[in-house]
Length: 139
Image (tube, rainbow, N blue to C red):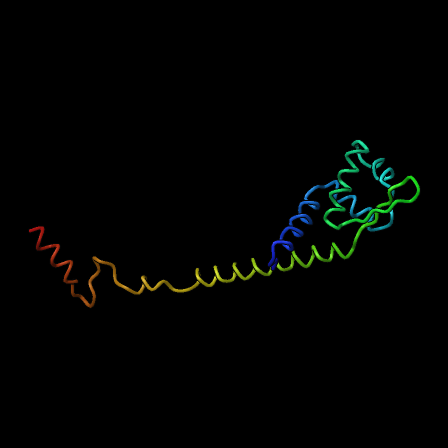
């Protein structure tokens, strides 16, 4: 799983960027081909500046790349970054599968306390010494 601080911060940036529906849609669009930020802004019911901010978050996470072509900013999705997200999710799933399997094993294991007679039970028709002591104390 994620080991060092830099890897953890990178994973946080990836998942934060993908936590927003608009950003996920931008990634999806830009994986099929390069788009200008202006083209992207026309697709969403928000300001150009808001779309620029979304693109900046995606770029910071490495999910898209930007390049300037004349006066336009062109955006392209980064499939390698999505493969990394997939790998991280697979690792998380494996960790949780292992935890669930261990919990299931613990829950399925017989409880050693179930094999011991209860305090007030008789074993082979005889009462326990501590039950006899309690009875005698009460008399």
